[in-house]
Image (cartoon, rainbow, N blue to C red; front, side):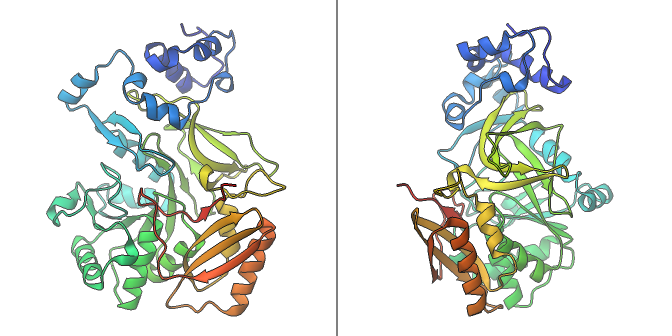
Length: 407
């Protein structure tokens, strides 16, 4: 039974009412929370990623729907997440939901809103790992025509960008020139590596007006190279397959929420205000998620949000609860000559820093010393830098900038 009066904004009241028809939310802890006379969002239990993985989609689909019927009628998409923060999760959403929630987020950026108003079907090129699937990523080994979905051309068909041959890079560039996209939609590592190829071969894309980065954390190193090569704004778009796009970066560098799509909370913040992001979705009736632990750290000021990276990627520290990927990445600000990196903790007292170098910018000894000193101060640990020619991705195809020690 759902209480008649909820101390929640109106859209959330409607979401909470859906729990009356969702098997997962019939548990005793949810039932007890929902019976409080003046229940607030914070009174409700959290939904963990492990629970979502175990119960989606059947136990989270309202009983007012039948999954087989929805599939036969072609009303839904069923996808699997990339498994970045653990094993893959099955999610379902309406046929038009992905495009609708993405557009809401994109329109909150002034430049993008202006461009899309003039050209609602603006062409994009997507460069990301084919380890993803569905509407946000694409299958591999398909020809040019088979990789066109609406106004999007899915370009990259290789899991590790560093191993793509120059011949394949040239094919990718030719396809993009043929497609004449208004914007790129890129995994930042794939986008950065493609940018370096274009720079080395003097390739330009006259139609390109901006770049969206998504799929994983965008380093200042990745951004610096893409901005240098393509000479257009690089804008971060944050979300997940199960929640939709939640935040978009503004010209100030902070991120703005898309409140129609979801309600955001910061749970268990540390002294700096960095805590775990909880998401309550509002627009996907087939997968109502309340206080979902999406698996990322976030902070907020009066002007906007800052995403800090995955919880599982946060490094350990003797005096602090966590050192987030963002805090590590900020040490690379104004450090030129690095294209990509991975900081791997060995113990609480030591870490290895793998560096892939920018072929157009020399990493000076002074900058390397400065970077090492910043990281050692941040972690209170000894850092050993090493130059690498390749950093391998995870099984999901995503790259980890920071890897904590297990001991």
